[in-house]
Image (cartoon, rainbow, N blue to C red; front, side):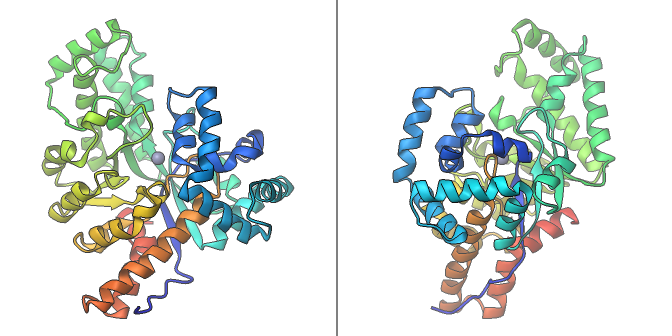
Length: 390
Ligand SMILES: [Zn+2]
């Protein structure tokens, strides 16, 4: 196969979540692998966790492709046997000896030179400086999520006061030069099929929503959330920022009926004058997202969630995405929201998959070796830099 060499290419992770060193030390060292799995991550982040399921999830890691590869790759990095016992022991010793040093080493092993952190999870938000310290000084760029600001704003007595407080939070974030994007997870709340309620309709819905105990219904919550999302897009344009939109599945709290690229399409067509990054590339609806990225110039794709949890789907997904979407709109991310091993393992997965997939494009005479390497470096780091002005 034609050789594409991306060894040594910088990687910037376009989507992850902050942690503190102490968080890593506080968790049960024996189950770090399971916390990296989609099952483990989803159990922690959703409201559906229960202990019985956690024990079963632990058992299931032993037959999860990502879990087995993670163990072998981390064993190679730590220089120990690829057994659960050996990896847990070596990893725990390395982590406890120097937490930020261990994390910096993991990121450095795959040239992860910066990360983009979605501060909306976990809550309360972990400040940028704390995460940067936990990464041993690797630079962190902020993404401000609007949903926690909505929770704060709705504590105000009236709809008008809530809107005012929400807008103040948008402006405060926009005035921080380290904030490179806003983000919404409205797919987790009332769905991506954004409507256009009048201010009066949204105000009436606000009162009904409060009366309903803030339950996430399409009847009461949706008009308010859609109204505020439209305000957020207007203010993001004013502050000249990218908007990150969660598009695709997630943990069991997601509104799976209204979370696909198809649901978001009409709104994206309307919002043609702001760069939008589809976080998760619509996974599992990657083909739908590929169409959206192909037809709408301002809509970009982040690979996280597909990476690493779609593990065996990376090659054919990259072949589909990069075979159609302008490659400058595609960027690597790993959705780390638990353990730092997510960074190097995902980075290695994507670097190697890009080398294979782009090599096949060279064989078909679609690309020169130079084209392929430039596309690969773009996905790994250059595209996220260019989009966000990093
Ligand atoms: Zn995420």
